[in-house]
Length: 202
Image (tube, rainbow, N blue to C red; front, side, top):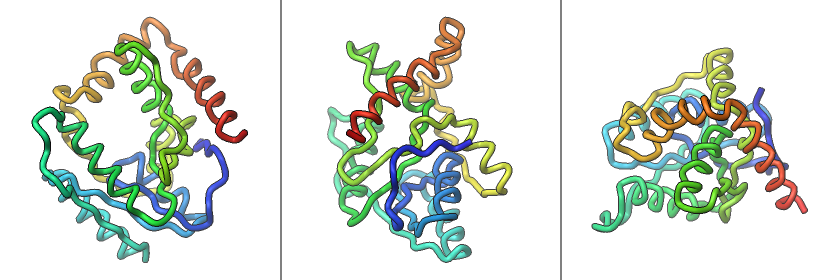
């Protein structure tokens, strides 16, 4: 079951990569909201494949398609992950409207784990300027189930399996061991997410 936090405007943009998370969000929200796709091209082969997938999907379903690209070169002191994230959010922040991302509870747990290793456990915030993350209490498996049940077409980025990227290393190598130590870690972090939602709503 997809769990939605907060009230959403009638018309919004969905940050969409073509993957199962964002496609589930796009399909779910399109049933009760006016949606447009906000796609960011990272300049990789996977991004080009995703662009073609989303261009076809948006045309078939009569959904507006907004496209962004990197506007500067990567600095020597930036990792590729940091560079792509900065450029992606610069694009999202340039959009005149609310942008919804597909961040889910598994993302929140992984981010909390990563930030804890750097000294302070952080919860992915509900909002970042015009970008909101209303699915932080939904598990990734629920997005996968939604796409399977609703026959939502997805395209997967093969680089998501590359553990040379920190996020992927945490997800594929560290998380299985974390779950052995604390199988209830998602419930623990969900409580922090709900507390954060309360502070936002107040």
